[in-house]
Amino acid sequence: MTKSSRINSELKGVWAIARKDMRIYYLKPPVLIYGIMIPFFLFLAFALGRDVPSASLVPGMIGITLFFTASSVGPIIVPWETRMKTLERLIACPISIQSIILGDILAGFLFGIIISLVPLLLGVLGFGVNVINYYTLSLCILLSAFCFSSLGILLSAPPTDNPSNIMMLSTIIRLPMVFISGVFIPVDQLPTGGRIVALFSPLTYTTDLLRHSLQQHHHYQIALDVLMLLAFIILFLILGMGFHKKSLSKRL
Image (cartoon, rainbow, N blue to C red; front, side):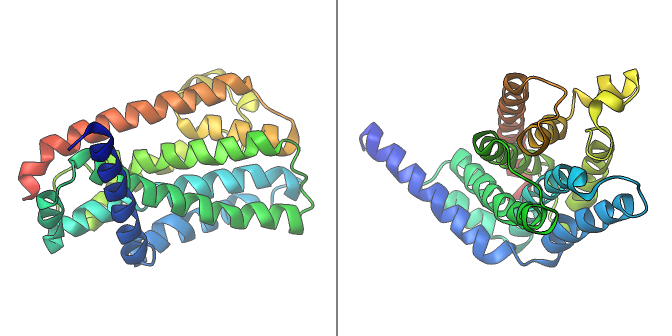
């Protein structure tokens, strides 16, 4: 098989894995609860009773929706397929473990994009928010969805066949990130310690890009936001694929 044929075969495998995941896992209760309901009620709890214009809350609403939805698919796929023994069949197929992981990431990526359009449309049509920079907004959603989906795959690396264990672990890690990333309080209004901690959260740069796209109010330069999201994508991909390779033998 030539190199181009091999690449084409792997790409077809990635898409096949993503389609399978979309068909099976999008409507699983853990994905709906952890990916949609939790960010909705979390945002609602912090938005109600605050003397803040509704339009200024829209970037944060989009950010946490994208964050939770894109990162909720991966943590359910791997342990569920380990329990159902379907992972063994995937490994037996003529496709690399990297392509299987990329297929799972693609499923979370598409899920995050689709669901994030709901608060975006709600903000534009319901709260009168104007999109100032469509290019930056599109780039932000694409990079962030892939970044958060890669994070979800990384969080699913522990070798267990119990999806609830992974979802609990992912929630413990993801939930604090919401409060340090400028979602509810802009980064420039955080204390010095908060601004330092915010640097280590990818959601910080997503929220900053969203504020620039919808409000022209941002803390970092756009180039820095984009570069940091790319850096987190590379980091999550390297760690995720490495950990999954090591834990694969314990799953079979």
